Amino acid sequence: MNTSVVNTGRMVWAALRMLLVLTVVTGIIYPLVVTGIGQGLFNDKANGSMVKVDGKEVGSKLIGQSWNIRGTDKPDPKWFQGRPSNSGYDPLTTGSSQLSASNPELVKLVKAAKKQVAAFNGVPESEVPKDAVTGSASAIDPDISTDYADIQVKRVAENNGLTAAQVKKLVEDHTTGRSLGFMGEPRVNVLELNIALKALAAKS
Image (cartoon, rainbow, N blue to C red):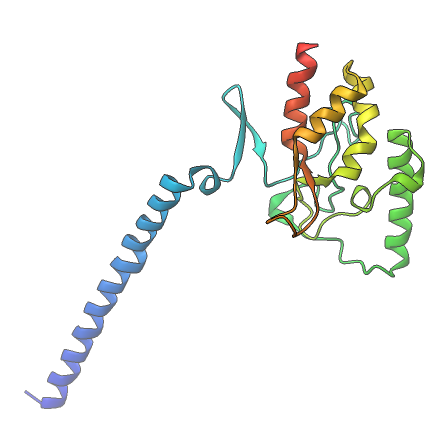
């Protein structure tokens, strides 16, 4: 038999064996090991950081959602509201409006939103924080600033039969500080805050 043919056959067989080994290692063993570690050590995060109430999943603490009056696009005064979303809080179509800060259309939208937020919460426009009228880059930010939570306290309290002090304490209890003590700003997860609010209102 021709030596070159034999050598070629050996090289092809070696390549096929390497392909098989790498397929098993990287396509089966590695994913199973990583999945096992994730499920064993980081079960909550590996499964989307889902939040459950009475055994039922109500959302992920990593993804914002709307808190509108059922069947409408109007915000429900009973709940704390999150940041505005360009995608309607759809995690499959995340992204900002792509309008630059100097774009007249964005300026117009922000001014209109500021007026609406101020009226909805019964506060002067000067007290409306930036995150109340601008969406995040992902459009599904689950958190709001403590400033935005604070201007909502009175409205939420009145619409749930609670005192402002009770709701303010709820916000304080659900405020997360800066990451590592110095990165970012204190923030409040809207989903977790509203779940706690519902439980508190049910007791009153």
